[in-house]
Image 1 (cartoon, rainbow, N blue to C red):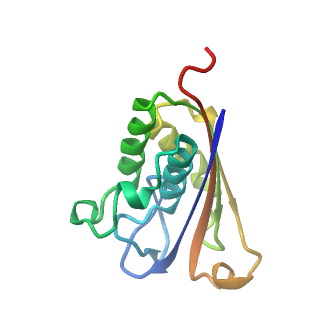
Image 2 (cartoon, helix red, strand yellow; image 1 turned 90 degrees about the horizontal axis):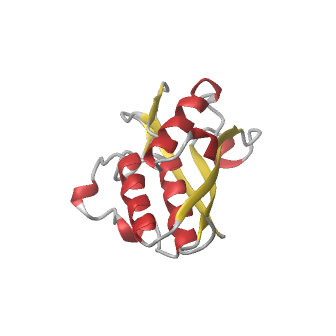
Length: 161
């Protein structure tokens, strides 16, 4: 069994859509970034790449490369996952925590789980998504942006059934 941890954070930016786990969430601002700035997909990508020992999202999809400008981060997650499986790893589970004050994500959690599961080619029971506030503390508490943590587990090549 291999475990990887992913983290991402982005500030809010006017004039952008808020995309989390491939889902457009109604909000007054989106997230700043080179791609669609989907911090959930970015954290999950880093978690699976880390578990497989295959680097990180920044090395695989550099933000200075124009081909990734405004790219769907869910598509980037799918591409990274194909590299993970090509290396012989099997996906087990991913647990995601989104930390933000607003908007409330409860109405979108199931769709977010489904989209992540589709990108990872697994059932949604193998994906967990939770949302927490920062209780008004710090830059997240002031509503300046969001942070996401993800933990992924993979089975090593040649292990188990």
